[in-house]
Image (cartoon, rainbow, N blue to C red; front, side):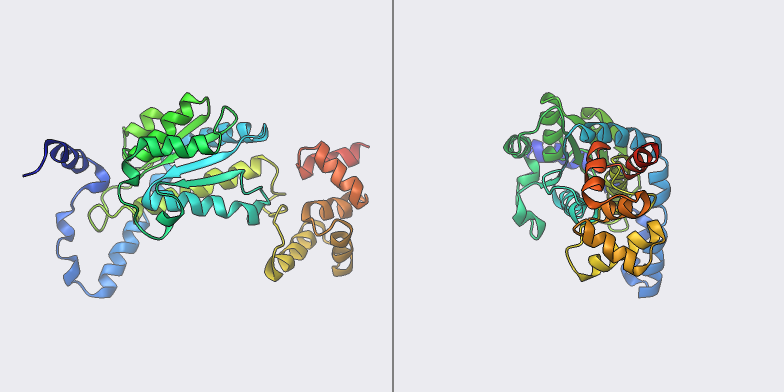
Length: 311
């Protein structure tokens, strides 16, 4: 016999948009593969529109995040299952893309590293686990914690936001249901309502895509605000392999119009630092001066160039 607690949970899930059953798709398994692919592609095409409806809230959250990070704070994602994996993915891509310290953007997933590749039973149901994970990294007032949960009710994500807010951190709740507990718990609620999934309750589909799009925005635009780009060029890219070294040379050339020889000389002068090399070429300064000007400009290349022009 079903326990009262399980019955209540089943009723709660049934009321969620992300868990709704779509009777018109009940025979989807009988359709030709191409027809299923067309239906799925059509579903995916609606996600960007759902995100667009939340852009003002997303922008407000980004401005608040950037302000904290400019003061030395960290951006921390916390979620379970697919939501947690997406947060870890976004965080892990920041160091090679923006040359951030690995501790500056952090992804926490319920159950830890093993949960990246396999389900860790019960981990998502623990608020206390989230509080412990945040305590372990010393979360505080300078930081931002983004709770990520398709349903907006996952205890791990909720616990993370509640603990972070009590610690004075900025909090953002990213979910795919309107009026979610996660949104209510956070200072900034981002609720991207994508509707019921192709496969009932499989929130790695449209909900996962929506979360990926928003996380892309949170990290990328925050880094733009922090001066990690010059125009649309990744001038803080970390050249850790042959592809990225080639990209570094290409970025310097695009930003400056310099010849191959000039580009190579500037990168050699700056130890391969793309932003510094651009300043060497456009500002006509040496490597140490470029480094000093960028430090004084908090890493903003445009501000460093203005300082050269004004000097």
